[in-house]
Structure formats: C-alpha cells, structure tokens
Length: 143
Image (tube, rainbow, N blue to C red; front, side):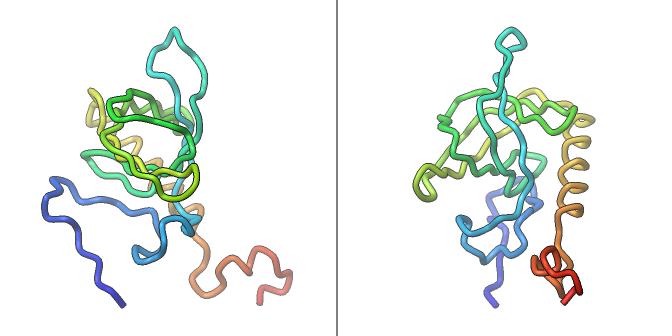
C-alpha cells in the first residue's frame, strides 16, 4: 500500500474525510455535504452544494460542480454553523466537477472548533462498517 505523507509546507495537518487517501478523487463518495451561500446577509440564497474532502485549522478542501473562482468569498453552511471562506485555488477534476481549496475569513477559534466538531460527527455518522461496506444497506440478512 502506498504511504501517504502530509505536504511539509502545510502549516496545519488536514483531517481527511476520504475513506482511502489512495482512491481516485472522482470515485470517492465520501466526505460531508455542505451548502454554499453568498457572504452578504442582504443577498440571501444558496450558490450551490459542495462536498468537504478535507479540513484543517488553515482551510478546507471542497469538490463541487458549482463554478467558483479564486478570491471569491462565500459561506459554508453546516446546519446552523455558517463558516466564511475565500476560494484560494481550483482545478478541474472531470466534467463539471472541480476541487477547490479555501481559507477561512475572520473566523474565531470557537466557530472553527464548532465547524470541525460538526464535520467529525458527520464523518463518524456516514462511515460504513469496514467488514460489511455498502452491501449492508441493501441486504436484509446482513451478508
């Protein structure tokens, strides 16, 4: 198995939401879904949806079919948590899907801690048992 090492240039270690760091990003159905919103209170409405692939104290990695650009400010909505971010980079994965990196904008340690706890809780909630996988969702006898 290929050993995954964190980029030494990173200031903060990432919490990966992927089941396997070696799996193809496009095929990964893991992560946590959040909604993307305009940052201004007077401009309500959702921009789109994204899936968090990793998160750290420095930023968040998202995959989305929503068209975003570097420097764009938005809010990630996680139930009642609203996390302001700015898109720092993006790259096309396939078709309309892009992977985006975002850093936080004026986020208190308390808000960031709430968001990271929410993501961790969702990560645990959506994990399948290692020995049964997705088949356990579809088979009555638990095979």
